[in-house]
Image (cartoon, rainbow, N blue to C red; front, side):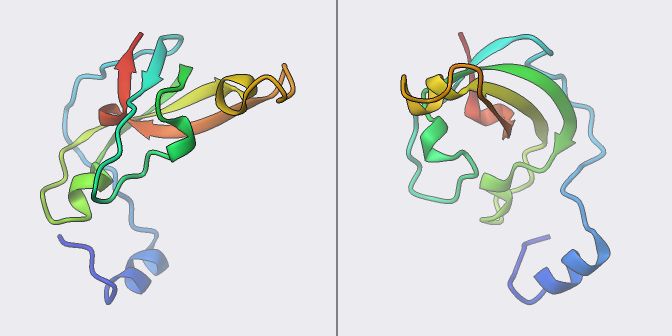
Length: 115
């Protein structure tokens, strides 16, 4: 289904999920050190710019979902895992960030590279 502005209110009201019932092997496991891809696509992406090229640690695998970068453009759901990845604040914002602070962001397989 192509997501159009007209159907968004109905999806939100019913609690629609992008989770898909497909078997996809996970690329990463809890504890894996990973790096976010450093790419700047001309189209939709859910990878925050401030995380591109940054390293973190996989904390949790949320399961298999439709990949929003392709789904938003009617290019198919390209089922893949979504992971919670922990980043050190200094990795993201530099040496002036508090040493013990962290940031957790949910990211899709296509955004992640192995270290």
